[in-house]
Amino acid sequence: MNLRPDPTFYASPKIAMQAPVENFAFTVMLSPDGSQEDGIAVVDVNPKSDTYGQIVHQVIVPYKGDEFHHFGWNACSSALSPLTGHAFLERRYLIVPGIRSSRVYIIDVKEPLEAKIHKIIEPEEIFEKTGYSRPHTIHCGPEGIYVSTLGGGGKDGTDGPPGIFIMDCETFEVIGQYEMDRGPQDKHYDFWWNLPQDYMVSSEWGLPPQFENGLVAEDLLSNKYGHSIHFWDLRARKNIQTIDLGENHQMALEIRPAHDPKKSYGFCGVVVDTTNLQGAIFTWWRDDDGKWQAKKTITIDPRPEKADNLPPLLQGFEAVPPLVTDIDLSLDDKYLYVACWGLGEMHQYDVSDPMNPVLAGKVEVGGIARGTPHPNGKPFVYGPQMVEISRDGKRVYWTNSLYSTWDDQFYPNDEGGQMVMARVGENGGLELDPDFYIDFPKGYRSHQIRLEGGDCSTDSFCYPSA
Image (cartoon, rainbow, N blue to C red; front, side):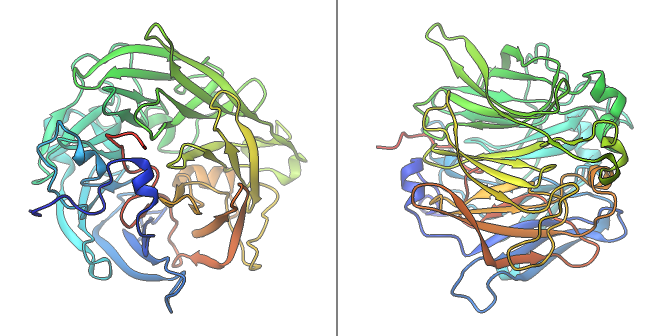
């Protein structure tokens, strides 16, 4: 145990933005067909280094078929909460779930170039103690590690609804279910919170039979994927309100609350509107009466395309949907980045006024029927997917794989994993760095990114920016 809080814990977003820049990034290495073991790649992101833009270390796990997807830290700035008993933890371990195996790995990255497996939690322990399966998103809270799941019990994960379970942040023991009263929540995806205001927001994707073997077109066209966001009393662990965004707004995925804890709003990305193939962003907020509201504030149109240029799944539409699959918000709450995985575009919106976002920048790379190469001339397969922003807001990193079976449906002739980075202009706008381009080892794809010392989708803050 440290004798003082970890120096990478920051009281406010503004203080975090002034912190030293990252030297390393940690990125998923996933074997889409399970023929190789998954792993975590350590990437050198220091431009002064001789190995800048290279994978400098790998942690390969002992099992096949995990399908690494999302992962997160054991501890972060939330440890500075006045309610916590864990202020002296280290931001040392990555909690890495296998979305397909339900196995969880604890990886010690205190020395990034010597990162190694610290502990493995077998799926049987998670099933027995929580009744959940398919662990997905990790968030470190003041008193423990919160893990969202996409499946309930049973072989296909439909024996009961999915939810959140909590792990001890020191021993990594699985403690149990989070929910005391889930209300109408019966699907799950992302979640995040505002600690001082004591609320949490969660979202919905679909149940395991709806995603594990690929997108189920019949379910999508019948609007059977998730389309609601749920608001929770964080400490009471109960659902206090659910907002249905409209059944046509299929797959309400990433939740991004404002980082400043004084603010009571945030954003949710919607993959596709089944009435017109648009992608969408909803702004949600709490009104003067204490009720939660949500409004669509960004729409992104599909691009017309000849059927012969499209994968079979899209040929009947003769269009490329944006497929909004990830969003991320800078620590100053100014810029929202929106990954349009289908179009092959990364959008930057000025959300200083969260009810009236303005497009401030755009980068094109990859994309269905387009395949725009990287500025260095090398390919970028699929499209921009998992996005992560440096604490100072000057660098935006992203990778390209969505989920193995979905990659194969939407990009059936492509294969590979890339990671790139764009630099942000002083007054907005972004431009890809031609010298930063990671091509992952053959047979591996990449997904979630975490940055050394924290990033913009890792930490929740307990104190407002002065």
